[in-house]
Image (cartoon, rainbow, N blue to C red; front, side, top):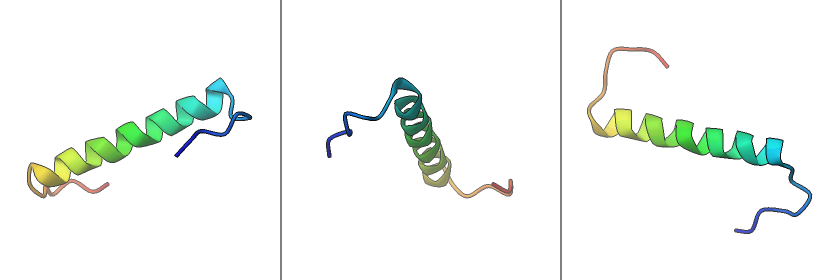
Length: 38
């Protein structure tokens, strides 16, 4: 999926941050459920 041309550097930064967050959560789930609350 292409990123829209009107999306600025800030928006792309937010998108990248969200992707990193999702990846981090996925890693936590893969390594086993922990007791810490998200």
